[in-house]
Length: 379
Image (cartoon, rainbow, N blue to C red; front, side):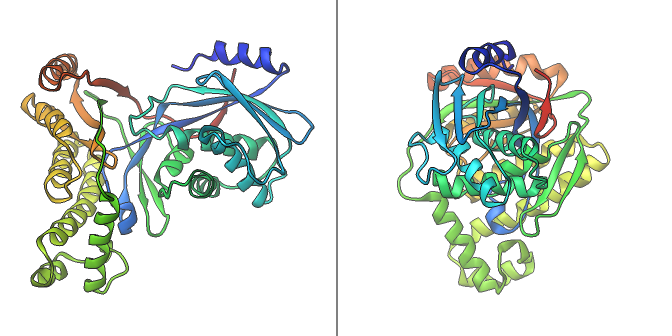
């Protein structure tokens, strides 16, 4: 939970005055992994953990920031072409520059901010930071930009000021989240739809493996290249438009690796749609079944899992948890688990015990609840 008293005290100590308070969440992705660059669907939801900022215009041309979690600050001029050197502060700098380029009349301001998104858990703390400031400055300075435009400003910040060539899912989820709903985003068209999330009798929990393997080469680029080769042979722009019949017809022309990569992607597109149908009828057991299928595909066909993540998912299976899979790019990070209430405490205790015994490392449970997207709030 964010320490709002600490934020208030920090703002009073560093700047003073009556600041407006804004919040933007991190996110989870229930299903739909490695589908974004293949033109497919993702299925994220905003969580209740996020970034909170207290912001007050200062009638000048300087932006003065203090990050409570880092216990240090930064200042830059609105017209500064270079910006801060430290990556963390470049997220805010990039948002400011992109808003100015979009015609929002941003003026100088003072801000104190902090958050409770666990770092390294794949819950997109950077997108929460970008969305918090994009929404806040758009409101404070009368920008009138819609939420998808603000999400794209966050994405552009990653690309141009931080050097991360990310998709739109994280910023989209942080801006558009709605309590009690997950969202199906079509990564090709940008269209999205809300689906009910009322898992009575179940809880969502992440289990952080606390492991990130050092990767040799460029595994993400290699997988993307595989998908692009198959799409080109199939005569489609992205794999999302390749049919199972077409993939089977192409199999003699494909090496085993490219075929398995494509098989995973086509299966994942189908699984996202299957989860949408299951949620429409309140069938959370089917949701969990599809989660396990996704993990199997990520582990065996897409090969982005690791022993630690496979162990966590296999432990969930052994204990008859409803659903589990790795969440995110892979090779470390978290699993996402859909657990019946009566199993919840036992599962967490047992998986922590067995993981420590197997790997000599403590895994960390992170309970999550689905919350609202970026918004102004009370101090």
